[in-house]
Image (tube, rainbow over all chains, first blue to last red; front, side, top):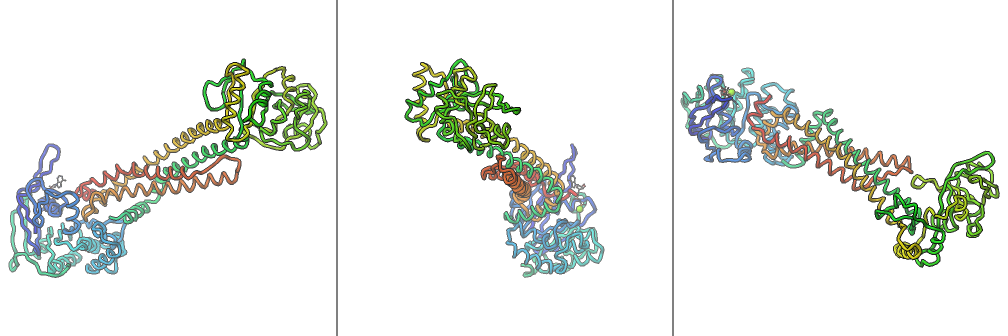
Length: 238
Length: 400
Ligand SMILES: Nc1ncnc2c1ncn2[C@@H]1O[C@H](COP(=O)(O)OP(=O)(O)O)[C@@H](O)[C@H]1O
Ligand SMILES: [Mg+2]
């Protein structure tokens, strides 16, 4: 479902060029549960942003479901972010002035879903992340774990094929982090492809495949024992 | 994202910063308010002028001595060497078929005295027809008659104000007053008429026109008023009077102004005035628009991370563009609406409490002000909205 070929990302700071990603080649199959690890500054977020169609690589080619992302317009990229990819950030990135329900509705608004259907769908997804009793709370009235669950609900609401989570538990205590991970594992069992960036090895080990980055290069790509080669189970969210 | 959705989001964003939104709106409110009020005054003046001119009588022609250099409107400066005489007026009355009445006029000032009271006022030398031509009426006694004119009698009819000043409540009929030290007998009192074009018709003493020529030692007339037989005949009357006077004077050394021409030239002056007033008010609306742009730019930079989030979950450029554009249009349209309510309210209130004040709210000024305010919202909102829509999602998200 995702294919990266010789991806590089170069930032130019003044006259100095910094190559943050070097010749990354990676293939992610539908239904995979992959964790991306590596020291801070190794380029994990940069890679995730490229995967999430939020950023573009300097060199190399990225195929999302066989389509070369470099050839897509801004609007087409927005559509992919809206319908096919769910992004979860370390710092939640919820809109502070609106409540949980409205935050979850946001992708549906941009997908052009009518209002009543939107509300229904957003409620449903919030219930699935166990927040049915918190839908009218604003982000500052929710705990970090609850905020992240709202963010996950928002990522899920358009039934994406893939969830990209950049250190989703980085700002949470162990217990909330564990709850979040359980949600992700359940989603993956239902067939959603999952890529999680983490520092925490105990979390990384719960994935089926661990990719390690250092200085912008993949130094290790191990498939955990007893794991199938992608191809998750059917059914679930759709 | 639908337009209703955009408006809802815009209202939410505006209400989350009420003071700022209100202050920004105030610029537009004042602008629209000023546009509507100033245009109402201009339009009111126009309505006032045409009402006054109609009140004078719509068949009216005014013949003044001297040839005006410009056409349309009463001549500003006249050549005093040229003259109109009483005989000119008689000639017109006799020979013109399109003219119903002719009123030769001598105008002067005089000190009118009765016993120990006196008043400086306007003295008009007139004929009997004057009251018909100008649509004036006598309240008690009588107006100057044709006999009074021919016999050069020293009689006078007093305007209301003059009567009040000299006689108070007592009956002046038959009493002798002195005008510039010449004795006149009072034969009538005019009905109260009020001020027209700043000229108080009640503050006048009427005397026979020939008597006035003697009093002021002149054979010239100030002007000749003529009433056409009907409104349709005004142009014909003008043509006839021109021919007749040229026959007598051997040249066109006079100017004929018709009611329609006066109305037209006054209207064009006042229309220009209205536009100038409206434009001045429009400037304040533009300043209000700059305020909107300023606030929207601040808002875009404050909400950079919001824009990043929206883009990350699938907002397209045009979604962000319309969100911010709708926000600025909402400010300007809402401000415009409030300004309109205030403006119309004030104008109506003024017109209601001071009926004499020339104020007239016209629909076109409301439509103009509202559409201009919406235009201002679009014009000054496009740049900030465009700036927001162009933001790179990753850079916007990183912004805290
Ligand atoms: N916009 C940018 N401009 C310049 N350098 C950047 C930018 N974004 C990230 N970097 C650099 O790229 C490197 C990788 O960053 P990142 O992908 O955030 O690492 P990680 O998520 O693995 O901690 C870091 O050295 C960082 O300083
Ligand atoms: Mg990172």
